[in-house]
Image 1 (cartoon, one colour):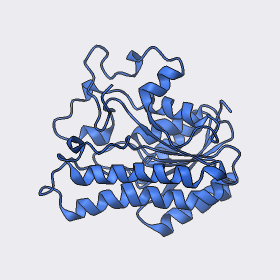
Image 2 (cartoon, helix red, strand yellow):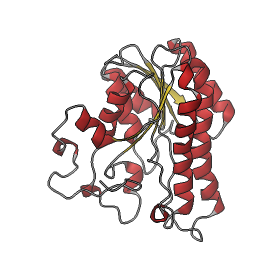
Image 3 (cartoon, rainbow, N blue to C red):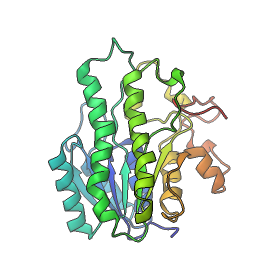
Image 4 (tube, rainbow, N blue to C red):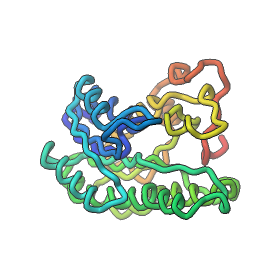
Length: 274
């Protein structure tokens, strides 16, 4: 099972960043990738569209289906999943990567932003999982991988940005619950989170973030690959940290993932102390 050749992945938020990196890593094996994201036309501030990622997937050796999807809306998700199944014959892997972020305190978080984070992060994860499960049940090695953090009730992770934390922990609670719910179906449900901040365009627009202290998205993509090629029946309900996954797989050179090797790395939010 150590290949994604011929597997079909449905990846949300795959037009850029971590989602794009996971798509390209799968494409190198000859996977089919449904690129489900909102950006169909070039964004004024953020690079990448579903079409540019699709072209890169094809160039890397995979097959791509660009799908303009806003995962807040059931009809769009259901239509996109149906299109992926029609094109590729099924779905083997769902990657819940799409996410909205606002690292703001309670008084500084407008309800419109609160609703956006809950709708994309929590509700979108639940909705995409719900839409894909009937198809995952037909797969030989089905996986749901959600980009969300390990669960802990330490107040320090809530106090600075209550709304964002609730939305991300909501994604993780979907992992916790669905892993047990779907265990008998043989569907693996796991979470993956980076140990350090990751240099994405979305993070780059947050004031005060030093991307020189970050790693490239490929570290998360490589970790995702090692999870998604495992036996779904023996790997479920786990909250993985990217670096730990790669160390277990025998990776020792992490400098190649650094934006600027030698610069001290910034630990990401929600990462438990070693």
